[in-house]
Image (cartoon, helix red, strand yellow):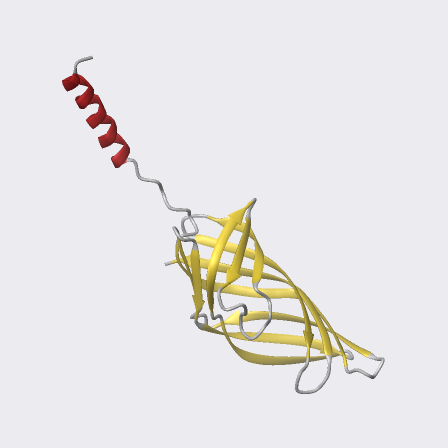
Length: 179
C-alpha cells in the first residue's frame, strides 16, 4: 500500500475512534428521593450496668422530600444533600408512639457497583454522626428514570452522654426519581 493510502486509512480509523462515545453508567446524574420506608425495625437497648434489655419494634416512612443524590463518573463520586421528614412509629410495652424527625441526607465520597450492589465510601468517614465509613445497597431497580435501593440497616451504638448500648436493625427501602 502506498504512503498516501496508509495515511487515508489511519486518518479514517482515528476519525471513527474519536467519534465513538462511551455511554455513562445509568446511575450517573441527579436523583430526587421520592420514598423511604422500613416496616420491620427492631431495636435493643440496655443501660449498663443494668442487666435488662429494652426491646421495641418500629417502622417509618418519609415525607416532604427535598433530598438528592448526585453521581458523577470518572471519577466515580457522589454527594447527597437535603432534608425530609421521617415519621417513625414504635411499639414499646404494647403501646404505639409516633414521632416526626427532621432528617437530612448529607455526605459525599466515592461509589462503585458490582453484581447489583452499590457501595459508597464516605470521604469524611461518617454520615449524620454515625461512625461507618461506607454502606452497601442492593439495587432493586435502575433505569433511565428510577433508582430503587434496599439497605439491610444494622447499627450498634454506644451512648456517650450517658452510658447505653443499642442495636438497631431494619430493612430500609428508598426510591429516587431521575431529575
